[in-house]
Image 1 (cartoon, rainbow, N blue to C red):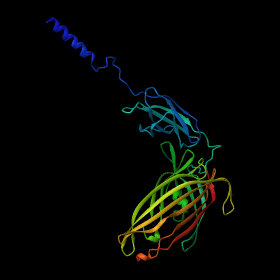
Image 2 (image 1 turned 120 degrees about the horizontal axis):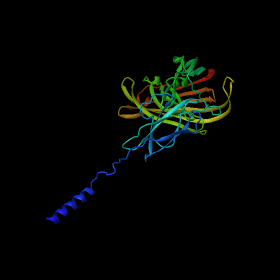
Image 3 (image 1 turned 45 degrees about the vertical axis):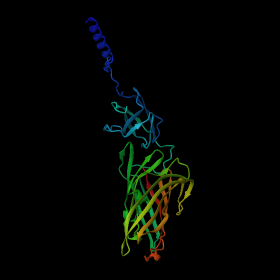
Image 4 (image 1 turned 30 degrees about the vertical axis):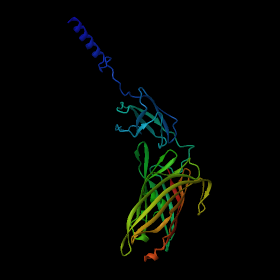
Length: 363
């Protein structure tokens, strides 16, 4: 009996030694970062950094202008350390919070840490954005079998709204029914700076009146329209899409419209003279091109209505510290001959238009 008792005691000790309980009483936690910093600050960018106190390899940031009320939701998730923050406004004080992202857990937020962006002095800015900035244009449109149309308009930057630390400016025209091609696009959305790029969020509306179809609305998100640093000839943005509409030619024919939008930094010009003789120095030409094609399902076959071509080509000239000073647009659509299918002839479209800056006011 004594031998059995000793054996049972030894087995009990052995099993206790194999227990999963942590006798130290410590558990691993997701540690809050410390020593938040902002370095390499420019008028539109800053490098945000911190010291990691645990083993996290990604972090979350919430940033806003000084005094904002944090939501606890990251404006930038799963970022590295340091993190290059872009799209900031010049001469604005920001503050940011950081938390460690440990995979299955997150730390408490650390911060806030404040920093103030520099002025844009010495930096180029081909589209100054500030509430109340305005640009007035003389517009002209010719072609399409119609008399030449002339109009005047002023485009103004409205009150900005802040998103993820960037300032978005809605653009407004005082003559929406007779606005130019470019100002019409800008006035259907918002502009903001993201580092050296000027970005557009909004809608481009393309009319297909000759086909008696509804306009095509192309929704653009975070589209770069110009870049202060991209080299000449660099494509900045590209977007493709399609939609199906119905063409009434006595019978209802489904038409598929394919489209694409591209923007390109074309060239930097030391001195640029507009057609009216105004001279501007340090000008960037950045083009916007909308290409389109259309095909129809008719009598059991697919026929091309519009072969792929550039429907709109907009050459836009931006002067440093001024903005858009001149825009020249060609609207060209050549329709296929559908007479062999017993369909009516659709007249081609060729319209040229331009916008020239006549006055501007910048804050």
